[in-house]
Structures are given as structure tokens and as C-alpha cells.
Amino acid sequence: MSRPTTVVDGRSTRWDDHRAARRAELVHAARKAVHRIGPGASMDEIAAEAGTSKSIVYRYFEDKAGLRLAVSAHVVATMHDALREAAQAAPTPLAALRAMVRVYLEMIEHSPNVYWFVTRTAIGGNGPGTDAVPVGPEPGEALGAYLDSVIELVADPFARAVGVPAATAAAWAAGAVGFVRGAGEWWLAHQGPDRQTRDDLAEHVTQWLWNGPVGVLHNDENLGSRGMHESRQEIR
Image (tube, rainbow, N blue to C red; front, side):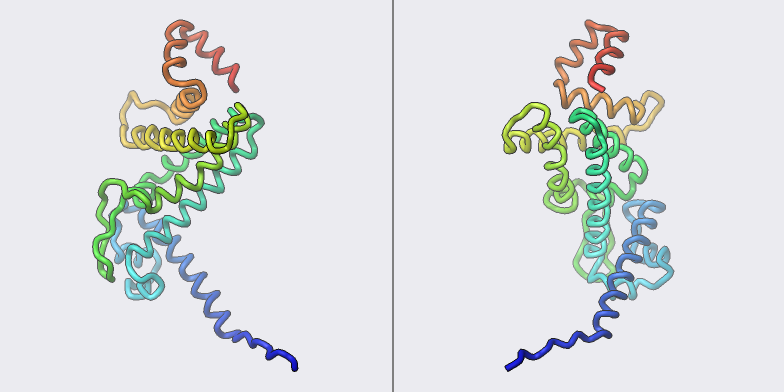
């Protein structure tokens, strides 16, 4: 006996494609609204950015938490791809680390509002009509997904440079990712005339991670500005 053939409903497939495309459009609009207005952008403001109504947005996302998670997933994927490309294009393990630090700082500086929305926004309530309130970081959500996704990327150049086991490299990378995040967020929040440039911070963070802050600072004092320049040239 021949097995029955499964018939694919073309209308269902077209609807799925349409729904996926519409969700992507709404995520893009939400990101634009947050970039322009801030992490506390309301669902009405996001809907206006998309040229639609709030009820339509809720047709594609159960609540604001669902929309936020979709935006977060998009941001995380974008950052992960940019970091991977930067690392792969670098000629040495040290250059790969520097490139990833620089890309991270570039991305958070480009849109601080989106970064804070993804990493430091709590969702009040579960149903339609609830809005986001900026608060402290939430472990295990979008930020946790981002950190987990890049640990392997950061571990690779370290493991290649010093030849340690994968678990040791991963432990170092986990600490490095947290260090970069902390330094980057501090820098992002502290504006002023004496603020370091992005490139200077990227270089300092890279050296601290690679050589250790105590050794680097001690060498800076002994070598002076000329020695600092030479040491930078050596590790490039």
C-alpha cells in the first residue's frame, strides 16, 4: 500500500510568511522608537512608529514583554554576528580580542537607548497595556543570552594564544565578557569633557584583559608615554 501524501496548504504557508514578515517589521519599528524616544517608549509610541494601532501590535505579540524579547533577540543576533565577523577578520588572537571590544563599544554607543531597553528594562504586568519601566539589570534574560552567546567567541582567541583547555578558556572568557560589559556601561553612563574616547577605552580594556591591569599600570608608570606607545605597538 502506498503511504498517504501530506498536502501542504499554500494559504497557511503564505500566512506564516506574512506573519513572520510583519513581526520583523514591528520589531524594526520598536527598535527605531526606542532609539529615538528611549527605553520607556510606550506601546502607543511604538505602534505610531510602525504606522499602525496598538491593537495590531498585540495581534502579533502577546504583550509588551513578548515584543521586548523579540527586539532583544534581534539585537543579540546582530551583536553576535558583528563580533564574530570582527574576530574572524583579525590576523592574531590579540587583534581579535581588540576588535571585539571595539565593536561592542561602537554598538552600545550607537544606540544607548536600545542597549538599555534590551539589558535594563523590566516589564510590568503580563497583559496588553503594560509598559516598560527602566530598572536594574535582570539576570537570565536578554543580557544573559547575549553574554552566553559571546563567551565562546571570546574564549577562542585566548585559547589559541596560550594553549589552555577549553574549560579554562571559557572561564577566562566569561570573566572577560563581564569586565568588558562593566567598563562599557560605566563609560556609556559617564559623559563629560574628560571622558575617554571609544578607541582609547577599547585599547585600555584590551590590554587589561590580555596582560592584567596591575602589570599594565605598573609598566605605564615606569615606561612613561614613550614606553606606553612602544608597548602598544608590540601587541598590535
